[in-house]
Length: 367
Image (cartoon, rainbow, N blue to C red; front, top):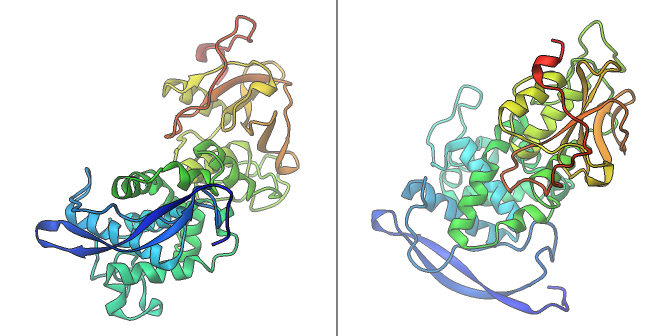
């Protein structure tokens, strides 16, 4: 491994062996050096191993599920992948099989088997029905995904699994996978986020959103699964594409697993307030935190007509005339700023200011 100026730390490579009553015997079988630089060797942090000693079921998971997750994690050490890759693999297994080695498929893939529901073309039945071996197949395919460290976890999973459901199939399980890997390994869960995911869910939303830059503006376009066609009667610069709210909903869901139920910017704003999302007010473009949602009203100030995602650099990531773009902040028609409830904590927000513009209450806004 390339020499680093930071001190070297020693990590144990471990082997997980099944034992009676669902316990795991974790045996140290070798040692290797890893740099203290969390992202050394690529995005996602160095691979982590299950801690030594007996490991029972992790809270919320059965002994069988815990054992399978541990085998997936340790197969990642053998494959030479990152902690982020290990967490993605556990996320996929949660989504595909609820961490159970299934001996059946579904209507879409009747020959699908195992933790990852891999079809015949993936390998032998014996391998697909073995937790460690099937995880090895997954990692081998994942390592071939171009630019995987710059893609959101759900997108990486989709490209490996070739699932018609898209990233929405996997992203909601990212946090569970992160917690499970952390519980099994004692590793710093932030490494899976900070390396290759910038710094948490808010930055992940931006990273996911940037993959769509250049798509056209399509009024009414966009679902949780991706861009869509225009709805007649509005601006249509091309198809498929996103309108402002369609893009924000897609990025929030695929970047952070947050499902915004309403479809229009106006409804999203008041829905967010009703959900208890922090209404941080306006304190200048340079005070907007990454991942906050910024809302704009029409000329009369009677109805919210636009939503953008703050990038934390005095600018926005949004879909408007000209398509999906990242540009400098503009304030004309500003209406409000909401802080979504990211699982890794809200971005720091300035204290309320007496000079901040007042927000209209729902009853004052035209329907």
